[in-house]
Length: 296
Length: 281
Image (cartoon, rainbow over all chains, first blue to last red):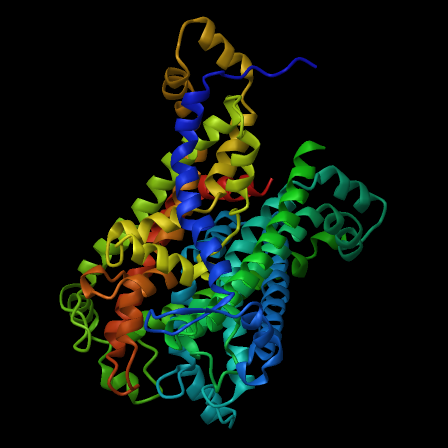
């Protein structure tokens, strides 16, 4: 194999890659290093002296019950998995319908894709409007037509269901775009052949479409988990503020509250380090997988 | 054949309409809300038909803001726009250059640069807020547009997309341009960038929306109201007791905040979809 042609101007190459590298170093590696450093120290909130405490900030997270990290971890897992299952199944179902040979297909697609542009924060506000115990229309219906004592600010189950639905609602369009693209790349001849062989809709989906869709599904699985774990801060901040109590304070919300509100810098830094490791692990898994698909 | 029975043909439409209603109903609800007075909304259940105060509410939202937070929407639109455009354009330029170097040049440390950039591929700002905040504050960038924009340019999505695209371009073009006496930069400007138009458009849509919809970062580093973005403004309007909130203005502001990114997605749907699914491949 001949080597591909490449420019040799080394100086120019460094110049070209410099802006990106500077940004990555100043706004990622430097803060990451600081977070790691900070996580080994105890600092008083008023910028005073730092005391080296070794791994104490980490061990405290996992051993000190009053810290609530374990509980936050558990609720985050349930939240992220709940979003992933709900958002992926609904959007896969809708994508399968939209992929059928039906009229108004373009209209349906546009109607289901545009919510991608709605921010997570706005999604939180929208659902807050509907479920606010005082002004929400659905809250009113639940209370007066179904006799449900609706007060999600006091009831964990209600709060959890509400944030899960709101966060999943926001993610529908994203998943829909990818599932639809995946479905469109399934060769029609395969499906027709199966149909001629007498396979019904369900069988064809299970045996042909779903396996061929598995790369998309895997990709979305990782992206939905990343979303659920790390990008849902606005929903919690806007809708429940971590309440009732601290019951819906997911990991990213806790990092923010411990750092910004409680000014526990060491503890917050230790949490940041753990979160970064989680994201980087997921990125590497995803990246290996993507590269493999590109090569073969 | 059973395949073509009437029910089989109608069912998908029904399912899709249910999906659309799930998506639209909440939006319709805010739209209606933004046409009533606060008192009408607070006297639950609020009416489900359009009220007479639509224009008045939007005029107030745009030019005056709520009484508990006097910043009008127009000021916040400007801030959101600067942030979204700064992030999208900045990221595209920086990423085009970096991807060009990584794909077309042979230099020591290339692999290192590659991994240093790609480790940030999916890294949301949420996981590194406190340390990044400290950096920005050390650099004196709190309450500045640079502080709002620069940390958001970090993630590698755009470099990744452009790299994929560049790798699909036959190298003979680069070689030929050299034989013809063009410098690498001339090749970049006159050949490569014009070829990259479609991925650039796709990236623009995705990054504009990403920038417009940032929440946690501006929440942290903007304390002066004249730097508030729309989403921060909405959050501030909603703080306080339920009875004091001017719901109709908040609802109008929420709809206005949704509008620009939605318009971008609808108008550039094709580029947007290709951009999203290209990064995945």
